[in-house]
Image (tube, rainbow, N blue to C red; front, side, top):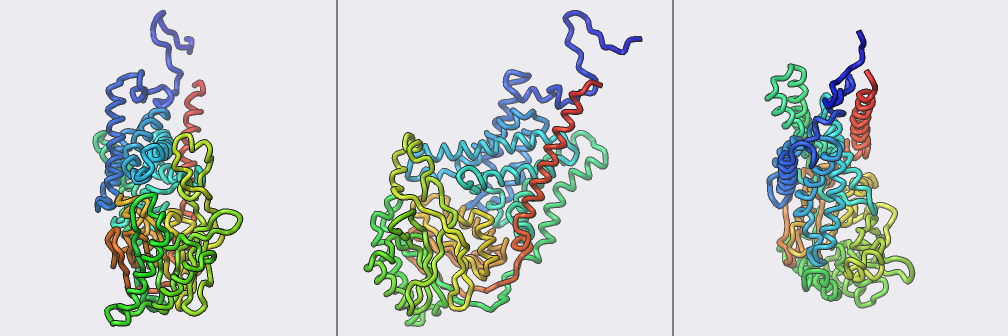
Length: 540
């Protein structure tokens, strides 16, 4: 008998023996024009809803627990889909997530930059969705899918123009049960745990409906149990014990004369506000109303007048520092005669004056520097508000302030794993994140950044001090708890006794290795999928 497959005239062509469902298009219904359009648009709506739920899990709302459920819903949309549908559904989820999360980027410059940034970042999430769809047919797929999610975050943190890590899953988990994992493997491990729990939740529901074998059910349950159990096991890593004693730190929030992009049009007023609030703190100390601090930190841009070039600005700062009588870290814009501007923190001694400096290393594209200026000008004339680009520093900054190692991580830098980690490894016993959020008005940006700083406190087991020009300034203990904070757009000073710590967490020691391991896992899943597809296309 012939082994060839025959067919009647007009019948469907026979499929090659051994061809898998993935290769023959069982997911065709997820593509418009193939199968059910209604099914595709239902999935599209659910994907966008998953993104919205993920947004709602972020501060200022204490709804961190929504994140796993949002990802479970997204997994239901992506599981078994083809690559193109995976990208489309991931992109829609990215829009639902990032359009509201990043709305502050258009606070003063209109919708064009906001929508452009959101579309770009959502495209990265689209690529992540593509990868998740591809690995979703593998055994133990939630582990591979969670690693693919981390790979997507790693890509967003590096490209383009140096990356934009805002919106990492980890940054929405400051109050969550998974947070101790940041001390074990940094934000990549924390993001992986949240994603794994979400994908595992979907897999548990899926296999429960199909009466699975015991091994399949065990793997599904494991995907949920592993991140929760690991988080509980990592809790001893979180401590706020004063290993190296305590110090009294003060943060100054001088406030700004007006909101928005024009806040610095009265640069002298911003400086005078911080001088006045520091002098008032000195008077409060003298009257015994607050304890005398060992050091003081001003925010980023507290002096947009270069104190090295402006004698009046230098005199005003020196008067405030002498009044309080302790070292003060000043946030200033330094304008060299040639070359780019510098966003600089200056250590100002009450006797010696300005001594050490730290130049911000992660310069914000389209905020502090304008890539492709002539092209971008076609879409928004606001680029010309940045007349002279800022340039990046090279080395981490740790100031010796009254015998304490105070690390400088300026504003946007707190979103980058390597910027914070390198500062701690350079000897910081305390991390300070001087920031300027006046440009973004009363938006949620300041609360998103505060949550990020809380995760960094746990990750490296350090007190994090957050002085902001216009709020919210805060003192965060090494366990991530906020012990003091200011109101927005209110001149204020925070004075708190804080612990000094020098022990390095596993996350500080191993650095990027957990992320690299998860990238290898993601690559292995995608490689396995590719190998299965190649085998499926071969003749029987």
